[in-house]
Image (spheres, one colour):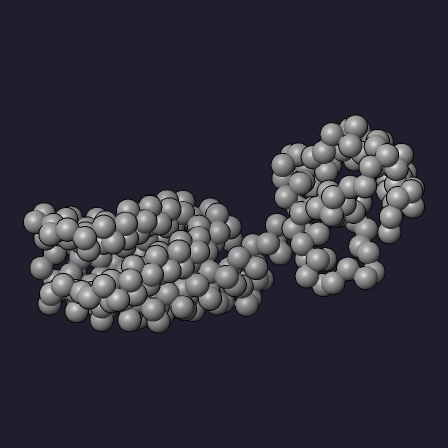
Length: 280
């Protein structure tokens, strides 16, 4: 569709929804003059601007590929958020989709974590080659990103159930993972005489966080049953081992079954959304 038909179509859609040019401009986060010039066929809008306008008017071009329809929806929701228009935004759908992403991220991070454990053991026995360092850094960054997505799922669950302990501990975990992942990477390039001390401090920090996170998981036992309870118990037990510093490796081993239970909780959360309605 080209001008002037394009401008006429936009004006027709706008009027059918009872919108003024000013209101449409606000919905699209565009200038009023831009809408006026497009409707009067003075300019040919960019494809992005056109998608924003059509998405705001809930109009889908028939020949638009499915991937563009998805883009239109995303653009529409983003513009509503930017303009403060929160009506009709499918929060439930967005939440369910994110829980699915968190579940997938957790599963992949668990598998990659096993590979990373092998690299950490190799690192503790001596210097790594350049190639292995590249693999190590890449894997560390990927796992850090996946962990953020994974823990974000528990922030969502904590928000749904008003579980502030789970929200806070998840957010602190995200911050701690980011900081310690950065340290692990930069420490590859110099002989860190304080690394042993820092590793001990890291073990204590994670011990405290994991115990608090475990308490938060325990509070999900009503909607998610024994799975959440087991996740909480394993977190608390592994947390105590981390606190000892000496037996940190036992805590590390226990994180494997712990994360499996947590992943199952996320699976239940997105697979059975009706459980999100259960009051704590």
